[in-house]
Length: 236
Image (spheres, rainbow, N blue to C red):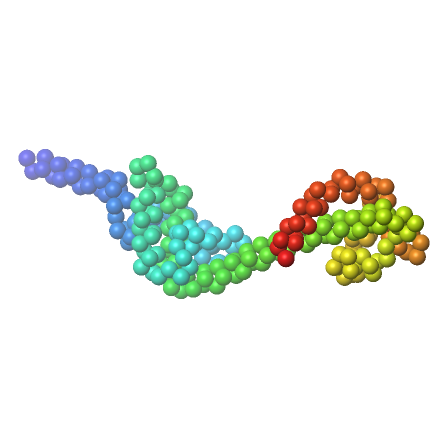
C-alpha cells in the first residue's frame, strides 16, 4: 500500500514538472528569464561575445524589445514579460525559439544598468552612423539630380542661341554661369561631360556650341527637363 502511494506521489510530481514546462508562458519575468538562461546555455559564448559591444553587426536591442531608448527599467521588465510569453517555445501557435532567444539576449543586456550603459554608448554611435549614411545618400541623390538639370539647361540655352541667332550661335562660359546659376568650377564638370559626349563643342573664341547630337538629346529629354524645372521652381 505504501509503495503504491509513493509511486502515485512520484507520478504527480513528474506531471507537475511537465505541466510547469508547458505552462512556461504564464511564468513571472524572473522565471521566464531563468528558463531562457537554462535553455540557451549552449549559446552563451555567442551572447557573451556580443555583450562586449565590439561586434560589427551588433543588433539594436531597443528595436528587438520594441521599446524607446529612454524606457525605464519597469517598462523593459513589462515588455520582456509580454514578448517572452508570446514567443516562448512552449506557447501554442506563437512559440518561436529564435525570437525568444533574441528578446532574451536584449533583455539580459538592458536589465543590467552597467551593460545597458555600455550598450548605449555603442547604440548612439550606431544611430549617428546610420544618420550620416542616410544624409550622404540624400545629398548624393540631390547632387546627381542637380547636375542632370544643369546639363539640360546648358543644352537648352545653346539650342535657343543657335536657333534664334545662327550667325552667332555660341555662348561664353561666363554667360552660362549667369544662366544656370552655377559657379565656373561646378560647370567645368558639366562642360567636360557634354563635350565628351559630343553634345556640345568649342567654337571660335572658345564659345560653346550645341551639336546635332546635342539637339537630338535635348529634344528627347525635354519633357523630363521641364518637369524637373517645375519641381525645382516649386521647391524654391
